[in-house]
Image (tube, rainbow, N blue to C red):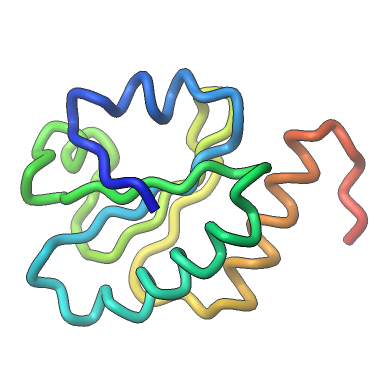
Length: 114
């Protein structure tokens, strides 16, 4: 999962042709570790259909304010420059997988099968 800086957000996330999984975390967040491990694992599976980025919330105060990041980890899912989903705190692998399956299907223009 690629770590990006605040100044790269527009190009890396909002202008990305793929849906984007953006994980806001900090270096000192021990409770973020499981979520980051799951995100790294999922990035290998969805790498061709969803872009994964990590953003340090402490080093990105404007983004944290803009997207109301009040707890970490916070996961934001973007598609076509729009925020589609926001999840706060630890998220189970199965939930994230279903969410990513739906986002990838919608982005591909396929009807939702669930």
